[in-house]
Image (cartoon, rainbow, N blue to C red; front, top):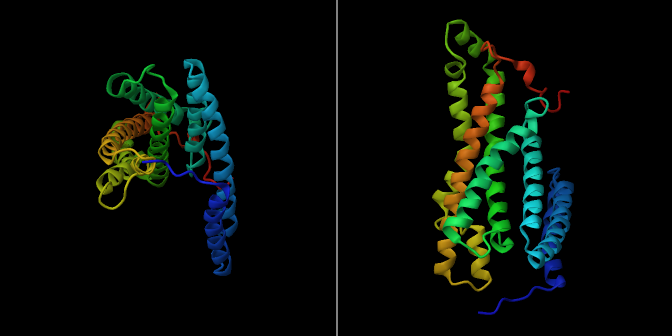
Length: 269
C-alpha cells in the first residue's frame, strides 16, 4: 500500500474547517474563537519546526543529538507541569519535582523498551527513541500535573483537618494519606480510561498513524499494545514519585504542615 502524500492546499482545506468552527464559536459568543485560532497557528508552526528538526536528527542519528533533543523535551514537559497547577510548590520545587519524576519514570521505561523489548540498531535510533519518548513524556506529564494539582489543592482545602490530625499524634504520612491517595488516583485515571477504551471506543493515535502509513494492522496492534503498556507504567510511576515527594515537601523535619511552601492560587497574586 502506497502512502498518499498531502499537499498544502489539502491541509488548507482542513484548516478551513477549524476557521469555520472559530466563526461559529464567535457567533455563539462562546469566547473561545481567539484561543482556537491561536492554538491552530501554534500547532502548525510547532509541528512544522519539529518536522525540520526531526529530519536533521534522523540524518545525523548520533547519541549526542538524540540526548539533546530528549533533554529539551523533558525541560518543556517540566514547564508544562508547573503551568497546569493552580497552586504549585514554591521555588525550584515547582518545576524541578515534576521534571525529576518524569525523568526517573519516562526515561527509564523508554530506555528499557528500546534496549530490551524493541531492540533497534543502534538502540538510540531516533526513529524509535524520539516518538516513544515523546508519547511517554506527554502522558506522564498529564498524570504528574493532575496528581500534583489534586494534592496541593486538597491539602490547602483540608489544612485544618490535617493539622488537627497532626495534633492528635498522627504522623505526617497518616495525616496526608487520604489526600495523597486521591492525588495518585487522579493522575492515573486518564491513562487507565485510555486503556479501557482503546480499540472499543477509539483507535489510539499511534495505531491510526501506522495504519494510514500502510503498516499491516496486526503489526500496528502489537506496537500500540506495547506503547499503551509502557505509557501506563511510566505515568503510574511518575505520578507516584511526584506525589510522594511533593507531600513530603509540604511538611518540615518536625512534621509540621508548611503551607508557605505553596504558591498563591493563580489569579490571586
